[in-house]
Structures are given as C-alpha cells and as structure tokens.
Image 1 (cartoon, rainbow, N blue to C red):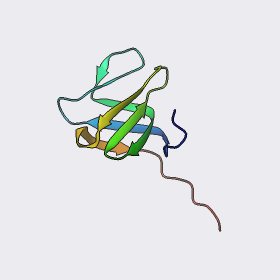
Image 2 (cartoon, rainbow, N blue to C red):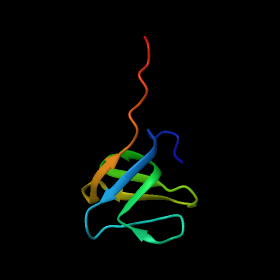
Image 3 (cartoon, helix red, strand yellow):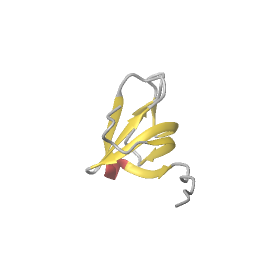
Length: 75
C-alpha cells in the first residue's frame, strides 16, 4: 500500500447502486467490511485483505464509509 496515504484500518465501505468492488474471492460486492481505505483527491483507495491489488473508486460512488474511532491520546 502507498505509505503516503492516510490509511484507515478495519473499515467498511458501501457504494451507491451500480458500483461494486471485488472481495478477496473476486466476487463483486456493493458493500465490504474489514478493509483498509484512504481518501485522496476525490478518490477512495480500498485494500481488501487477501486481494493483491488496491482498488480505487471515485468519491461520488461511495454511499457510506465507517471505521473505528481513534483512541484518545493524552497530551
């Protein structure tokens, strides 16, 4: 994965109708969970565990993104 991107781990992404991403088995899905994702310049980069490639979709194709809230830091 591109280290310069700000990756979010253990995320879920849901796409609007008509758009899909491939899961680890290559099946096309409109919703995936347990992925890593990064947003850059109007595109969402999605890394699916077990898949060799990072997939990229345009931000308008995304209905919802969820990821764990970061732990608070002291300081």
